[in-house]
Length: 52
Image 1 (cartoon, rainbow, N blue to C red):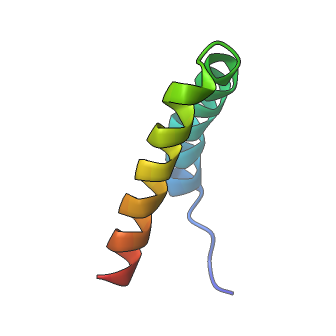
Image 2 (image 1 turned 180 degrees about the vertical axis):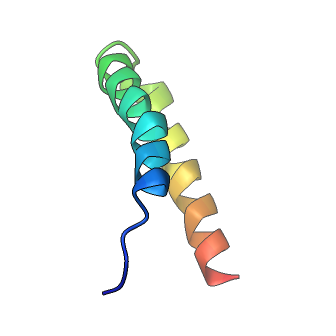
């Protein structure tokens, strides 16, 4: 509810779309033993950032 800032949306898309593309291709090539701890660490750090 409010105004949409199209410039900010464009910047978000420019940053996120290549990340989504690269991440989806890399997850198929990286082993689970490496990927799971990386994802768990990232989730813990994001949770900590949201809590404090």
